[in-house]
Length: 555
Image 1 (cartoon, rainbow, N blue to C red):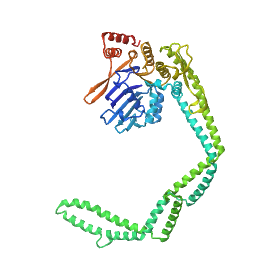
Image 2: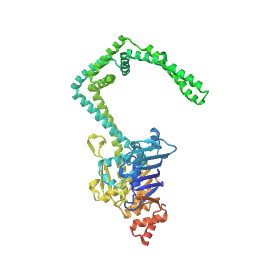
Image 3: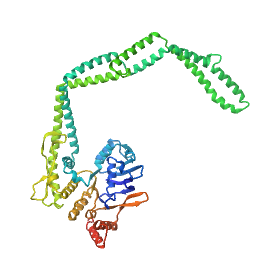
């Protein structure tokens, strides 16, 4: 569950720290006060994309952080261990920093994380039902995803999609090999000849570096010998050698220290120089002895380098790239050999199809079973949401051809009253009915899922009266099994909450900001009165609000 959320310089929130209850928590406030900003911040912590406009005006960066308790989410614990992101105990800390350049950084338990990792972990921790969920509910993809999520087999659905792509890829390789057989034969002949030439040359990157260095050294051997001789003479062998002159200077300085001890520091600095000059002269003598003046070796090196340059020019690469060209040639020949095996490609395509159909068949069986259960439970929920006698159905018509999402499409059908024949949800349901059905499906799907925290962002829009009270009761009941956060504008829903926060917009010296205030019993009645009566709250409105609050306390 979500334990706490901290926000700094995000939209109109300057500083906000909030801790959450384990059951049903509602967020209320006037339109535009910033109720959904908290959810936007949470979504960013769960992997959503950041927009610079979400930064608070004048701020250089925004910081978001959330703490979750995952003691009841073993899948999240296993995932964290697998990703080497586990923290101490059962707490998970998510943090994200966003800057004015549009860049963001994220951490999980103090370790750097990617947005993909935030999103993957977030799917195990929080399910968010947005206020416009009913608008996407008419889309086949949304209906299919809801059935798969309800049944808990989204992983199988992803596996079916992976196998479908593998099957299509195998078919494309099989077909491409058949159409390119003639062209590949010509290419194979060219590549085979190039491989023979490069293999016979048998050059390595190390040999090229060694030959280049040897050629430079051998070509300038006489010059290097003269340089070494001059250096030895200057350092130690000439009458005016540096080592002798430095030794004489040191003797005079040592003698002078008897007159002024301060010269001892100079002596200390010069003594190591004597040793270094002597070592340098010895190193030059060793170098001179090792220096090779063999003309035959120089000729051999130059012949080998000329051969490498000739082959490199022929194939339009640098000489040092010849080993990589050989590896590339062999890899391409192996790929062509594989693609030329029409029977093997056909077998792979057939095997990939079998694997896809096995997984897709399993997915179809699960969808049939859980679609029936979803329809039954959604129909039950409709009876309490002012659609008595209505029916909800999930049809699974077979597809004319297999698809990445399986062997069937998913279509929600609804009848809002007993005399109506079920029809496609998007065409049959009115706007208000669609909102209520979307809410029913959200609650039903959440009850069946394993995600510990559920967020409902004004999913109760378009309803009121007794239906609103029913929605509040549904969310309160759901809160006994999950942590539920609900942004609402309905007092009938807010009255059922176990914890209530009011969001207000206030003017400050540095601009407009949103504040979040936890409400006690008296403040809750006042907020319910505001929600009931609008700008003008009367004694009658307060009485109604108090009655509403006391009526819906959890028994």
